[in-house]
Length: 496
Image (cartoon, rainbow, N blue to C red):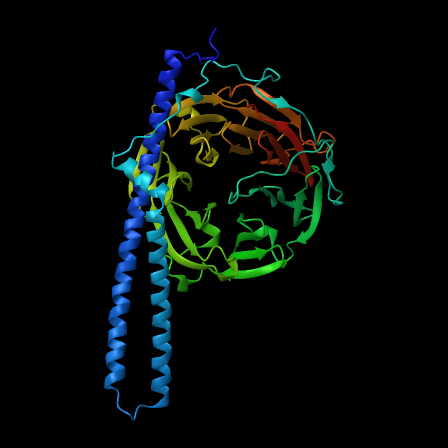
C-alpha cells in the first residue's frame, strides 16, 4: 500500500482554478502597468527638477563670483538664504531618487516587471489545490456564530464587558475605515479602536485582549459634530477630520488638533473652487482625499503622512464626469470608480481624467430597479475585488476578477447602513426598524445572523442604525451597531 495520499482533482475544479488565477494575473498586470507608468512619470519629474536645481546653482555661483566687494549685507544675507534653500531641495531630490533606485532594485519589483514583460510566468503549487476537500464543521450556514457580547453601552459610559475572551487584534496595519454617519451619529473602527458618538460627543473606546470595551477618556471637544462631513483614521494615534473650516488632524495622545489646512481658501489653488456646502461625498485612502461636488470630483494629495503635524497639500486633481450617482477611490493607486446614470455604468478614471475602464450595467439591471439617484451607493471590498452597486433595495455585485456581474438580489426593504469587508465577502445590513442582518456571498439571499439592535427601545419610529465591523482574530469578527445613543457589540466566527 502506498505511503503517500494523492489529492483528488476534478477537471472542472482545475479549469475553475486556472481561470481564477488568469483573472488575478490580468488584474495584477494592469495594476503594475499603472504603477510603472506612475513611477516613470515621477522619475522624469525628479530628473527635470534636478536639472533645474543644477542650473540655478550654476547661476548662483556665477553671480557670487561676479559680485563686487561693495555688495550690501542685505544682498549677502539674501544670497545665503537662497543657497541654503537650494541645497536642501537638492538633497531632498537626491534622497527621492535613491528611494526609487532602491525600489527598482528590490527582488519583488523586478519580478513584477519581468512578469509584465512576459519574461516570467507565475508558478503555482498544484499540491495546494483542495478542490474536493470537505470543510470543517459549522452550523450549516458556513459560519460558527456565537453571541459573545450582548450588553449595551449607554450614554452613562459604562463599559461593555465580554462573556468570553479572545486573542489580540490582528487587523492589518494601515487599514483605514471611512466613518459611517447619520443624523450626527458616527461610528468607525481601526483594529481594536472605536470612534463613536455618545452623549453628543465623539469619544474613543478600546477593545482589550479580554474582549472588554473600555473608555479611554479621549473626547473630541474642539470638533463640532454638526459640521463634520468626514472622519478617517491615520493609524491608531491620529484622526483626520473634514469640517467647514477645512481638514484637521487630531492627536489622540496630545488630545488636541495638531494641524489644520483650510482647503476652501483660494490660496490652495483648487479649481474649480471648493465649497463645503456643495460636498456630497467624501472618501479617503492612503494620502488621497476624495471630495465630490456635483459632477466634479476633487482628489487632494497630502504629503508627510508619516508625520501628520507636518502634513501639507502636495497636489490636487479634478475629474469631471456626467450624471454622477456615487463615487469612491478605486482598488489601484490613483484611480476612482464612478457610478453614472443614463445609461447606468461603472466608469474607472485615473486622476488625470482618462477613462481606464467602462462597465455598462444598463443591460444587466432592469430600468425599474434603478430607482432614484439618492438611493444609489457603491460599496467596495478590496480584499475580494468585488463591488456592490446598491440601487435602493436592489443589490448588484460586480467582480473585478471575473469582469462581470456575478450576482443580483432584491431585498425586502432599503438598508440605511451597510459594510462590505474581508475575503469572505461579509455584508452587514441595518434597517430603519432596528434590525441588523449579516450575509455572505455567494449565498447572499441567506441570512446567517440577525438581531434587533435595541429591543428595549420605546421609539416606534425610524431608527437610524449605523453598523461597522472589525477583526479580533483570523476567524472572529466584532460587529458594531449604533443607534439612539446605544452601542452594541456582537462577535461571530466567519466560515473558514
